[in-house]
Image 1 (cartoon, rainbow, N blue to C red):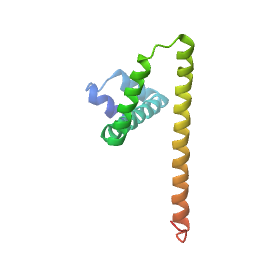
Image 2: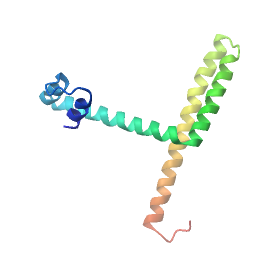
Image 3: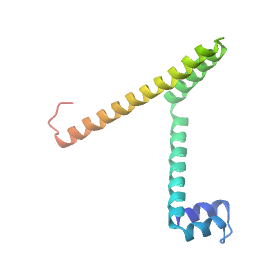
Length: 119
């Protein structure tokens, strides 16, 4: 049903081929709803990031640093080294953030379960 409403926003014809396909195959309907949910979450995250001043500043600094790297004359081997190093660094930073978030959630739960813990 949610998929039908979403399609109706862009296609007002009640006999839309997409809607008919979703009615005929529940798996298609579920996949479409899942896709729409992912799109909504992505848009919501993008909106939060757009309004987050710290993120915008960090994004601008990152873009500037990338421009600086692009201006350096490097041979193919040096470029390949950089191309491997940057994703590895990004992955490490993402893992750090994930671990820090999990630790924070764990700490909050432990306080909730045992309020006598010193903060």
